[in-house]
Image 1 (cartoon, rainbow, N blue to C red):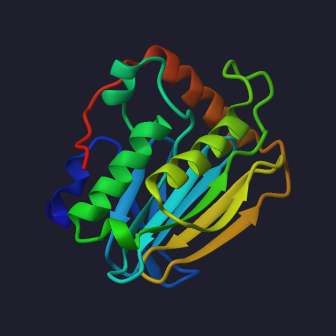
Image 2 (cartoon, helix red, strand yellow; image 1 turned 30 degrees about the vertical axis):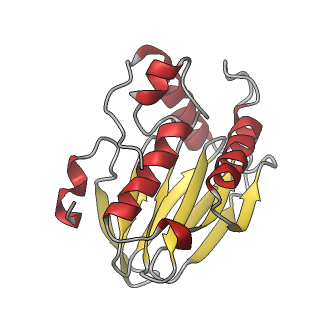
Length: 204
Protein backbone atom coordinates (compact mmCIF):
# COMPACT_ATOMS: atom_id res chain seq x y z
CA UNK A 1 0.00 0.00 0.00
CA UNK A 2 1.50 3.34 -1.00
CA UNK A 3 1.29 6.33 1.32
CA UNK A 4 -0.75 8.19 -1.27
CA UNK A 5 -3.50 5.56 -1.04
CA UNK A 6 -3.93 5.72 2.73
CA UNK A 7 -6.57 8.41 2.42
CA UNK A 8 -8.92 5.80 0.97
CA UNK A 9 -9.10 3.94 4.31
CA UNK A 10 -12.12 4.81 6.43
CA UNK A 11 -11.08 6.95 9.37
CA UNK A 12 -7.77 8.13 7.89
CA UNK A 13 -7.36 11.74 9.05
CA UNK A 14 -7.61 14.32 6.27
CA UNK A 15 -7.10 17.57 8.19
CA UNK A 16 -3.57 18.57 7.19
CA UNK A 17 -1.88 21.91 7.85
CA UNK A 18 1.49 23.50 8.57
CA UNK A 19 2.27 23.92 12.27
CA UNK A 20 4.20 27.16 12.72
CA UNK A 21 5.10 26.36 16.33
CA UNK A 22 7.10 23.30 15.30
CA UNK A 23 7.76 24.46 11.73
CA UNK A 24 6.53 21.13 10.40
CA UNK A 25 3.66 19.63 8.41
CA UNK A 26 0.92 18.41 10.73
CA UNK A 27 -2.20 16.24 10.79
CA UNK A 28 -5.09 16.90 13.18
CA UNK A 29 -6.97 13.81 14.39
CA UNK A 30 -10.62 13.91 15.38
CA UNK A 31 -12.47 11.13 17.25
CA UNK A 32 -12.57 7.96 15.16
CA UNK A 33 -9.55 8.89 13.03
CA UNK A 34 -5.97 7.65 12.66
CA UNK A 35 -2.89 8.69 10.72
CA UNK A 36 0.32 6.92 9.65
CA UNK A 37 3.41 8.49 8.15
CA UNK A 38 7.09 7.96 7.53
CA UNK A 39 7.68 11.69 7.08
CA UNK A 40 9.00 14.25 9.52
CA UNK A 41 5.69 15.67 10.73
CA UNK A 42 3.60 16.13 13.87
CA UNK A 43 0.30 14.41 14.69
CA UNK A 44 -2.03 16.38 16.94
CA UNK A 45 -5.23 15.56 18.82
CA UNK A 46 -7.25 16.68 21.84
CA UNK A 47 -8.51 14.01 24.23
CA UNK A 48 -11.16 13.90 26.91
CA UNK A 49 -12.40 10.41 27.72
CA UNK A 50 -11.01 9.18 24.41
CA UNK A 51 -7.61 7.49 24.13
CA UNK A 52 -4.85 7.98 21.57
CA UNK A 53 -2.23 5.30 20.96
CA UNK A 54 1.00 6.51 19.36
CA UNK A 55 2.84 3.56 17.82
CA UNK A 56 6.05 3.51 15.79
CA UNK A 57 8.92 1.40 14.56
CA UNK A 58 12.01 3.28 15.80
CA UNK A 59 14.24 1.55 13.24
CA UNK A 60 12.31 2.85 10.22
CA UNK A 61 10.70 5.97 11.69
CA UNK A 62 7.29 4.85 10.44
CA UNK A 63 4.50 5.39 12.90
CA UNK A 64 1.14 6.88 13.62
CA UNK A 65 -1.62 7.77 16.03
CA UNK A 66 -5.27 6.82 16.52
CA UNK A 67 -8.10 8.42 18.52
CA UNK A 68 -10.95 6.24 19.77
CA UNK A 69 -13.83 6.60 22.21
CA UNK A 70 -15.06 3.08 22.99
CA UNK A 71 -12.99 -0.06 23.66
CA UNK A 72 -15.15 -2.25 21.43
CA UNK A 73 -18.52 -2.62 19.76
CA UNK A 74 -21.51 -4.45 21.10
CA UNK A 75 -20.84 -7.80 19.45
CA UNK A 76 -18.19 -9.69 17.48
CA UNK A 77 -19.68 -8.90 14.07
CA UNK A 78 -19.74 -5.21 14.86
CA UNK A 79 -16.13 -5.24 16.04
CA UNK A 80 -15.01 -7.05 12.91
CA UNK A 81 -16.69 -4.42 10.74
CA UNK A 82 -16.21 -1.32 12.85
CA UNK A 83 -14.68 2.01 11.99
CA UNK A 84 -11.79 3.49 13.95
CA UNK A 85 -14.23 4.81 16.53
CA UNK A 86 -13.83 1.48 18.36
CA UNK A 87 -10.55 0.68 20.08
CA UNK A 88 -10.35 -2.89 18.78
CA UNK A 89 -10.46 -1.75 15.17
CA UNK A 90 -8.51 1.47 15.82
CA UNK A 91 -5.56 -0.48 17.21
CA UNK A 92 -5.62 -3.13 14.48
CA UNK A 93 -5.89 -0.67 11.60
CA UNK A 94 -3.09 1.51 13.02
CA UNK A 95 -0.71 -1.41 13.54
CA UNK A 96 -1.53 -3.07 10.22
CA UNK A 97 -1.09 0.18 8.28
CA UNK A 98 2.30 0.78 9.91
CA UNK A 99 3.36 -2.75 8.90
CA UNK A 100 2.13 -2.25 5.33
CA UNK A 101 4.23 0.90 5.08
CA UNK A 102 7.39 -0.98 6.08
CA UNK A 103 7.34 -1.10 9.86
CA UNK A 104 8.24 -4.36 11.60
CA UNK A 105 5.99 -5.84 14.26
CA UNK A 106 8.94 -6.97 16.39
CA UNK A 107 10.21 -3.38 16.62
CA UNK A 108 6.97 -1.60 17.48
CA UNK A 109 6.70 0.52 20.61
CA UNK A 110 3.88 2.65 21.98
CA UNK A 111 3.00 5.74 23.98
CA UNK A 112 -0.61 6.10 25.14
CA UNK A 113 -2.62 9.06 26.39
CA UNK A 114 -6.11 10.11 27.45
CA UNK A 115 -8.94 8.30 29.16
CA UNK A 116 -9.82 11.23 31.38
CA UNK A 117 -13.02 11.18 33.42
CA UNK A 118 -14.47 14.30 31.81
CA UNK A 119 -17.90 13.23 30.51
CA UNK A 120 -20.36 13.15 33.37
CA UNK A 121 -23.59 11.43 32.49
CA UNK A 122 -22.23 9.65 29.42
CA UNK A 123 -24.41 6.62 28.72
CA UNK A 124 -21.34 4.38 28.48
CA UNK A 125 -20.30 4.15 32.15
CA UNK A 126 -16.68 4.93 33.06
CA UNK A 127 -15.70 5.26 29.42
CA UNK A 128 -12.35 6.95 30.19
CA UNK A 129 -11.06 4.28 32.61
CA UNK A 130 -12.42 1.54 30.34
CA UNK A 131 -10.45 2.96 27.42
CA UNK A 132 -7.29 3.14 29.53
CA UNK A 133 -7.70 -0.44 30.71
CA UNK A 134 -8.40 -1.62 27.17
CA UNK A 135 -5.34 -0.01 25.57
CA UNK A 136 -3.01 -1.34 28.26
CA UNK A 137 -4.40 -4.87 27.90
CA UNK A 138 -4.33 -4.76 24.08
CA UNK A 139 -0.69 -3.72 23.90
CA UNK A 140 0.32 -6.27 26.52
CA UNK A 141 -1.42 -9.03 24.55
CA UNK A 142 0.26 -7.91 21.32
CA UNK A 143 3.67 -7.74 23.00
CA UNK A 144 4.15 -4.06 22.17
CA UNK A 145 6.05 -2.26 24.96
CA UNK A 146 4.62 0.99 26.31
CA UNK A 147 7.44 3.53 26.54
CA UNK A 148 5.35 6.31 28.07
CA UNK A 149 1.79 6.89 29.21
CA UNK A 150 -0.46 9.56 30.67
CA UNK A 151 -3.87 8.02 31.30
CA UNK A 152 -7.05 8.70 33.30
CA UNK A 153 -7.22 11.60 35.81
CA UNK A 154 -9.88 14.31 35.25
CA UNK A 155 -8.17 16.56 32.71
CA UNK A 156 -8.50 16.84 28.94
CA UNK A 157 -5.18 16.65 27.10
CA UNK A 158 -3.67 17.98 23.90
CA UNK A 159 -1.17 15.51 22.46
CA UNK A 160 1.61 16.12 19.94
CA UNK A 161 3.39 13.08 18.48
CA UNK A 162 6.36 13.02 16.13
CA UNK A 163 6.46 9.51 14.61
CA UNK A 164 9.83 10.01 12.96
CA UNK A 165 11.64 10.61 16.27
CA UNK A 166 9.17 9.13 18.76
CA UNK A 167 8.91 12.40 20.67
CA UNK A 168 5.55 13.04 22.35
CA UNK A 169 4.32 16.12 24.14
CA UNK A 170 1.21 16.29 26.32
CA UNK A 171 -0.46 19.44 27.53
CA UNK A 172 -3.16 19.05 30.16
CA UNK A 173 -5.83 21.64 29.56
CA UNK A 174 -6.45 23.91 32.53
CA UNK A 175 -10.21 23.48 32.52
CA UNK A 176 -11.53 20.00 33.26
CA UNK A 177 -14.81 21.22 31.79
CA UNK A 178 -13.68 22.36 28.36
CA UNK A 179 -17.07 23.05 26.80
CA UNK A 180 -16.00 22.60 23.20
CA UNK A 181 -14.28 19.27 23.86
CA UNK A 182 -17.13 17.92 25.98
CA UNK A 183 -19.73 18.95 23.41
CA UNK A 184 -17.73 17.28 20.65
CA UNK A 185 -17.33 14.03 22.59
CA UNK A 186 -21.00 13.99 23.60
CA UNK A 187 -22.07 14.44 19.99
CA UNK A 188 -19.61 11.77 18.87
CA UNK A 189 -20.93 9.39 21.53
CA UNK A 190 -24.47 9.99 20.30
CA UNK A 191 -23.47 9.21 16.72
CA UNK A 192 -21.82 5.95 17.80
CA UNK A 193 -25.22 4.74 18.92
CA UNK A 194 -27.10 5.78 15.79
CA UNK A 195 -24.57 5.25 12.98
CA UNK A 196 -23.98 1.70 11.72
CA UNK A 197 -20.41 0.43 11.64
CA UNK A 198 -18.73 -0.07 8.28
CA UNK A 199 -15.39 -1.02 6.75
CA UNK A 200 -13.18 -4.03 7.36
CA UNK A 201 -9.74 -4.79 8.75
CA UNK A 202 -7.08 -7.12 7.44
CA UNK A 203 -5.51 -9.14 10.23
CA UNK A 204 -1.85 -10.23 10.25
